[in-house]
Image (cartoon, rainbow, N blue to C red; front, side, top):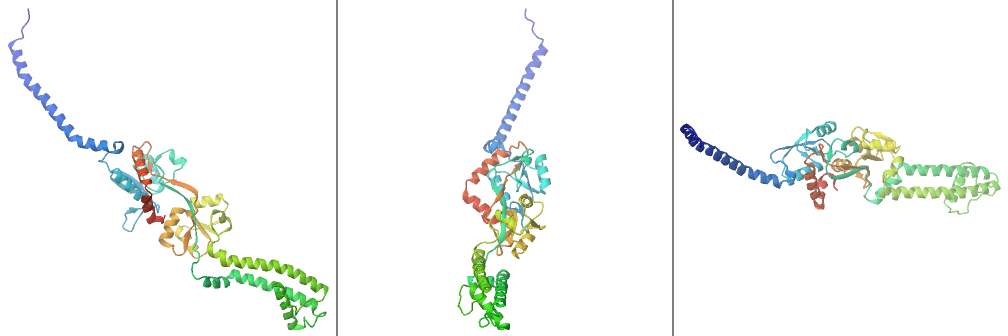
Length: 386
C-alpha cells in the first residue's frame, strides 16, 4: 500500500516549483547576455596573430643608440629600429609605451620581464641568447672606416697644391743635395786635369753641378765631360744612380698627383696597420684593432675623432658603420666619406623575455615588411643614406 505524503508536503512542493524554474531561467538569461557581450572581443582576439590581447599596452625598452634609436629635439623617439617597430605594432594593432634605459639596465629589464620587447641596436650574441629570445634579424651591420674626402675641384689647382706640398718639396731637396754632392766631387777630381771645363773657384763648382744635372737628366750636351779615369768612373756611377733616382722621383710624383687624387691612404681594413687610426675606446672597433695589432689614437667621442679626421690629423676612423654613416651624414658630409667596406659583422634584432608570445607574430610582421625593398629603402635612407 503506497504511503501518501501529507498535505503540507504537497503544498511546499507546489510552491517551490515556480521559484526553481525562475532561477534556472534567470541563470540562462545571464549566460546568454555574457556570451553576446563577449562575442566581439572573442572575434577580435581570434583575428589577431596568436591571440594577442588588445587591451594591454606593451612596454617597449629602448636606449640612445643612433641611428637605431634616439630622441629628436622635441624628445620624441626616432631611428631605424623605432620606426620599424612602430610599423610592426601597427600591423599587429598593438599599443605600446617606450621606456628609456641604458644598455646594462635594458638587458636586465628584458631578462626579468619588465619590458615586453627591447627595440634598439642590441647585438645577438651567444651570451644574450641564453637569457632572452630574439626576433628575426632586421639589420646586418659591422665595423666601417671613415676617411678624409678626396678633392674633386679643378685639377690645375690640385696640381699646384701638390707641387707646393711638403712631400714634393722634400723630394726636390733630396735630389738637389745629391746633385750638388756629385758636382762637387767631379769638380774636385777634374779641377787640375781639366781646368778648361772645370775651372777654379765658384765657376768650377757651377761647372761641376751643370755636368751633374745634364748627366742626371740624360740630356748630355757634351760641353762638359770628365777626362780623368777617376772622373769617368764617377761619371758612369752617377749615370746609373741617376736612372734609379729619376725613376723613383717620377714614380713618387706621379703617385702624389694622380693616385693620391683618386684614392686615399686607407681603402679597406687591410690598409689600417700602416695608417694613423682613431677610434673610441672600449668598443668593438678598439677590440678589433687590438686583435689586428693596429695602433690607434683614442678619442672620448666619435665626433672628436671625426673632427680630427676632417683636419687630416689622422688617416682613418673605425667604428660601427651605421653610426659612422649617420654621424657623417649629419655633421661631416663635406669633409669625410665612409668607405663601402664592412667587416667584423654584427646582427641586430628585437629582444624578448624567454618564451614570449610576441616573438612569432612579430617575426611574421618583420618578414612581411622585409620583402618590400622600397619599404627598407625608405626606412634606412633618412638616417644613413642607404
